[in-house]
Image (cartoon, rainbow, N blue to C red; front, side, top):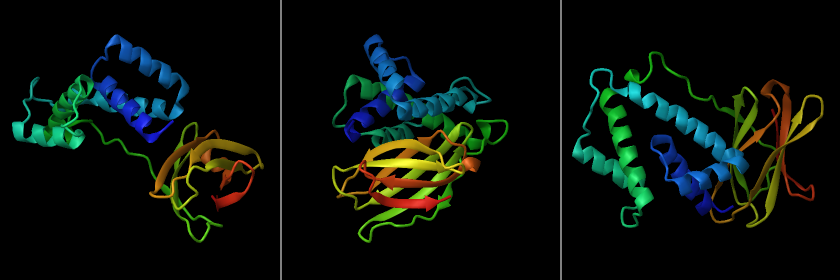
Length: 215
């Protein structure tokens, strides 16, 4: 799936978190989420954020965002020269939601602050001289997430990410495709707990090691 395809799914996911989709879009999105764990995670996170919006205005049931603020938010959401009906609805919903949160401040959204994910930076080894890469881990209840930024890999080449547990078990975290003209940012998840993971590797499908990290 291309980056443009995922941009389209992210647009639908964002709209679905804030307003009902039409039946055709809803069916299309549900079918995609059934097969794409990455987009399912995005949808879960956005739904959780959207659920907090009703608490964003504790003193009034109706907040009218400043028109100038709305226009700045709409301009930031997307290219207004290429609007279709779905993009218009998404921009209006995001503009009102963002303006409401801005007006009352972050402190009014929750009774207590909700901590975000903690990034654990890790040192990479065996990285080719012509490749630049950074990596960080996020600990989840059901596994470990790798956030990998890498620049200079072979364009169009598949790469496999594998975690290694303390017991020596190899657990796949997925694959990505190299791009040679810009950095690639990947978020990969493995079904191994952080306290049971000892390393991860990035390799080609034929087993050629590209980089690794002891974690």
